[in-house]
Length: 223
Image (cartoon, rainbow, N blue to C red; front, side, top):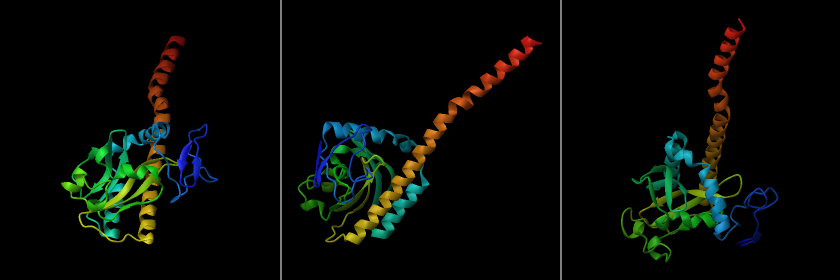
């Protein structure tokens, strides 16, 4: 069982995180421990969206631009967290395409459906010695909303970053960030389903020429 703030969370036979009546996480209430079993299942979910790393996504680019505009931030990222690294499906204000997981702020957001808010990273013992805080890009403020899959696993975040600390990030702002994160996850899922449909129909398309040649050969032999 996975421990949470609101009781225990199990993984059923379909590996869906059981939270609430709909089998979906309860935003703002769930907190899990990253047990080996949970992490194994979570990484399996991440791999379903791995194809996004090599596909340009204008919708995601627009969403990070929108996040920067709404929250007045220097940087916005859509990150997916793998076993040893996080990579950015879309980014603005950050020149790297990936970082190691051990310096990832977003990795700390994997254990909760709530928004992770760090007002001043220099004063937070989790991040004060982080290379991204002590050196470029000199992260001070961070807010990350989890990307939750339909099966209930957090695969990454939509986050905003600033090089100036903030004393406040209101509940209304957190709600808006969560809404943007849900939009990101919705378009991820749409792309995943589209790719799955393409993969399912490809064998039929690929075999059509062979079927046609076989029929032509049969007709020649018959005549």
